[in-house]
Structures are given as structure tokens and as C-alpha cells.
Image (cartoon, rainbow, N blue to C red):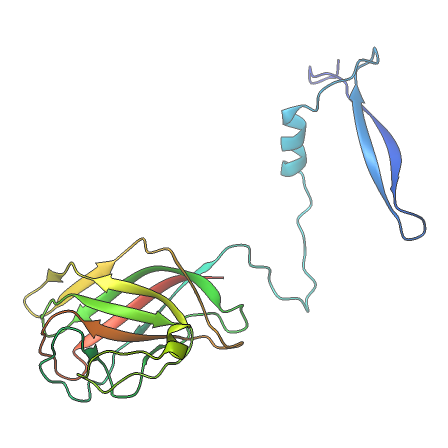
Length: 222
């Protein structure tokens, strides 16, 4: 019995060869037993003590920090509405021929992947109309503003998902439609690209002026 009232543990160390020298790896096998030679189970408190007294890893000065968790990032797009007319259901809402860009949504130098956590549509015209965000991994060809939404067979291969904005909350000046708990894996198709791309499609008949609609994306970036 040790001075602290715990069982006196004596390790028995043996080298276990794993491979053929000199390229093989040797490991240590630990056996615990008491003063009578009876084998003991590895006690939980010993593992906890090792963790508490462990030596922290120190990176060399020329090494980048290690990221072990994702980081929340957000980006917004506020398209110039080229026509800015009264739309009908199924129309594209955005700048003619230019998809929305969500710049810097991924970390520079990162893998260009993440999880879309939430999105918010901000409607400065308080139209509060059901709207879809078609989200793509690379830039795509979009129609003219206020024209029927269409996407080519080639571009639709890069579709990541569609976010539906349907529930709105209005103030006296504007309305917002937040969508949470999306959990959609997203990625940039081109190496080094830090952006996502999108297109808005209305499912009603809103009347917008240019810059009336903004979309904000929040992702957990790898």
C-alpha cells in the first residue's frame, strides 16, 4: 500500500517488436500487478493523472497553428436588380447574367469545405414572398433579371442545395426570413476558391427595386 493509501503499482515493461529491424517499430507493453504478483486492471484515476500531468505539444516557430475545430464564417450578397420590375412566380431575381457571389465564405488556404448552418433573406421592400436560394459550388450562367429561372444541365451538376425562405418576420420598414439548422455540406469546386455562388428564384409576385434583397450565409468552415 502506498503512502497515499492507494495500491502500490509496479510496471513491467517489455519491448514488443513490430516489423523487421532496422525499419521495424518497437512498442512498450505495460503490465500492472500488486506486491503479491496479482494482475491489476488499469485504474481510471491513473489515466486521469497522466492527462493532467501530460506535456503540452509545442509547435516549432515556423509551423502554422493546428486547427482542431471548424470556424464560423459568414458572407452576404446584395444583387443589383437589372430590371427591378414586378416578378411572377418562377422568375430569376438578380443581376442579368451574373450569379450572386458569397466571397470569403471559406478560409484562405483552407480545404474550401464546410457546413451551411443558417441563412437569412433580408427584404427591404417588405414583400415577404416565398423565395428559393439555389446554391452552387462554382459560378454558373443565370438568365436575365425577371426572366423565367433556368439552369443548364452542366451547371446543375454543381448544385449544392436549395434553401427555401418561407416564414418572414416584419418590421415597419422591412422583413426578414431566417432559416436555421440547415446542416448542408458545401464546398468550392475550384481549388483555392473561397466563394460560393447563388441565384434567387421567387415563388410569388414581388415588386423590388435594385438592392432591395440581401442574403446572408453562415457556415462552419473546415
